Length: 226
Image (cartoon, rainbow, N blue to C red; front, top):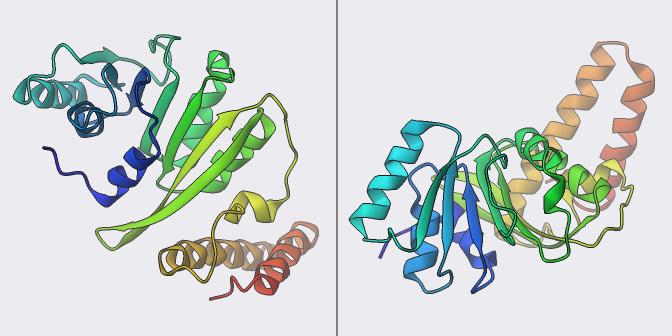
């Protein structure tokens, strides 16, 4: 059995059983291989934008004799992903890139779709895309991997667009300073918020700085100034 990193293991914990699953940006193909070997998924797609990572995934598929269960697809984002996929995983990209990839694929906007997203940075961009494009977040989990903190987001499509505030985009509403694994993520997001505020002050952008000051005050009131 393939042993996943904590980051990929957390993503795998959200995946629904017996669905058509695609792992976009698959790299070595460890996640789809794990899902198939665990009996969670019978048919999976391992997709990547470059031949090199796809070759690595091919080696994994061949090593574990999963040729009948995993299709390898060269794809720029979701361009070549079959539209019958209803379990879509994107791990290991920046949040701004994940948002861009999703925005180029209108076909994902259906009520059967489940997104499992693990942004390396800028998770606020992911939450903002989801809220403004008819998706709702049903769960989030933080995890620690190689002394780095990550968050994994599970989202479904409802068709109801929502305008959220900057605090929600930065922190979501599923994490708590009482959780040891959430604390590191909260610290990182709070640090980004304070750095952004101080940078705007130094740049004499008073109006924009006041917006971030309000977010800082809200974060402090929530106990996120750890």
